Image 1 (cartoon, rainbow, N blue to C red):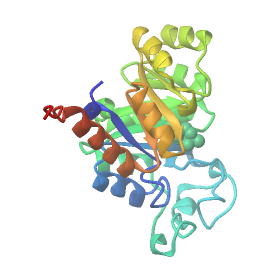
Image 2: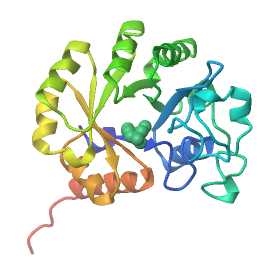
Image 3: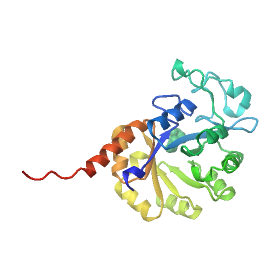
Image 4: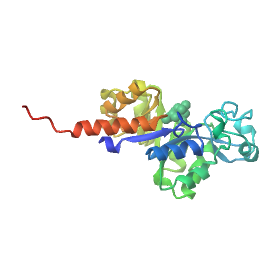
Length: 253
Ligand code: G3P
Ligand code: CA
């Protein structure tokens, strides 16, 4: 993996600088130069797929209660930005299909299935197909059941398993399921783990990068990508690593 091919995946958008999982955060990530965004999906009471991390709206909006207890209309009336900063008061919870339309051709969309229903997996896959974005979406989940559903209903989609700890059993299950990516917790990523997963044919992309030190360690371990809240810092680090590697050795005087 060359550093220029490294997947800089803006985690919930550029979520260090703008409210997570909003157009403001995704647009900013793209302006910073990220070509990958990550988001989380849940289903509303009336069956719409929306982009939100928690299963309740309490932390990231001015509303309360479970996402699955709201209709799309009541959800989209909520302010999804002020909790982060007053200048984001106009941000709303996006519909997944709005994200597909807005970023089609501009960003690869790493879509994490958060909710726990077969309906959510199947409807998410349907929307990806309907919008002609199969090659621009990777489906991820911590839940093996959701990945099994995606493999069954949309085998053409790229899938990645988010794991706290990579084990022999998980590798065997991922292989049997036909998953393309293994997504280990960043603090567990070592050169040995990456080599092993590469030898098994997996793309290795980390999650849970909370400091620049961990960010650099994941790159140095040889991984293929990571989700990161501060894509600008990762892009700058990759650029500096590349220019250091390309610099000719000084002639002895
Ligand atoms: O990249 C995956 C990462 O998003 C998983 O954790 O809690 O941020 O959804 P979380
Ligand atoms: Ca996520």
